[in-house]
Length: 143
Image 1 (cartoon, one colour):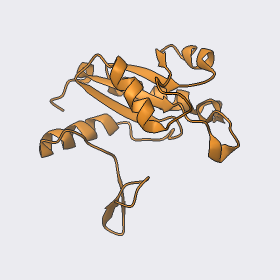
Image 2 (cartoon, one colour; image 1 turned 120 degrees about the vertical axis):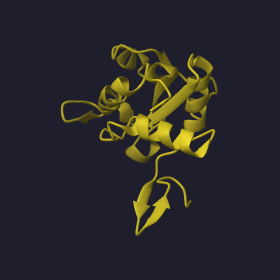
Image 3 (cartoon, rainbow, N blue to C red; image 1 turned 30 degrees about the vertical axis):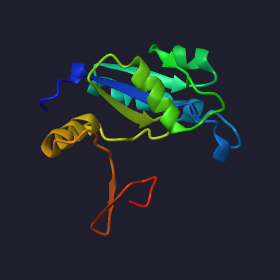
């Protein structure tokens, strides 16, 4: 990877209202003995120069994870793009990578793979996708 690790900031997205889970704070839900957000933090931290969390409630609990916590600047839980905006507003590196708090098993080389794809394509953005039946599919859209 020619993009240096210290040039990449990581952002754990934990700012949702948990509407599909009866309003619980997903990032603080226990998974194998620790909060989901902590799993994501531990996987992302060795891959980037620094990590921050986007959260809109239970800020003290997220702050106890030892990284900066930034709420959305926009009111009423407008969605993940507001979390991206919070991360971009506080990012001090040339690159920002985001990971949702509820993906405790994303690849340990995710950032390296995204950076390689970014450079190989000369792109402005790289995004993780899955492959189904030989076709690439974005997990949250019909692309």
